[in-house]
Length: 102
Image (cartoon, rainbow, N blue to C red; front, side):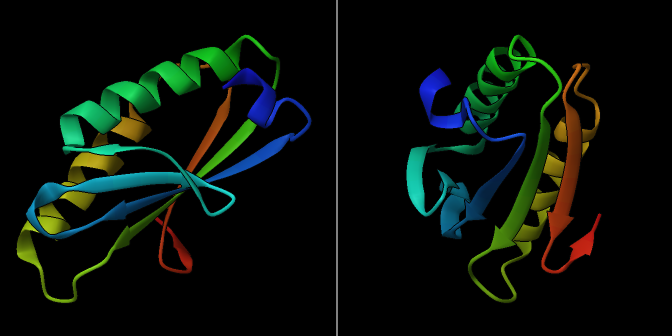
């Protein structure tokens, strides 16, 4: 996965939350991985650890709940926000939902 991000100083990652907690994590419209939120969060942590070793990277996570009115999707969104904000890394992490910074 290192070569995917090697030339980018700012990395925009989409986290798309679907019904039933199924999540797809994508970069430049290409899925990196998908599965339940716990699985995806573990993969995201691993990804951030890898990127931390490459120097000062800015990672922007764009959270999208794909089903309007899905209360479980909103709960999953909160889960990702809490976990991403608590990451201890040399990378700059920003979390956005829709057009706004969370």
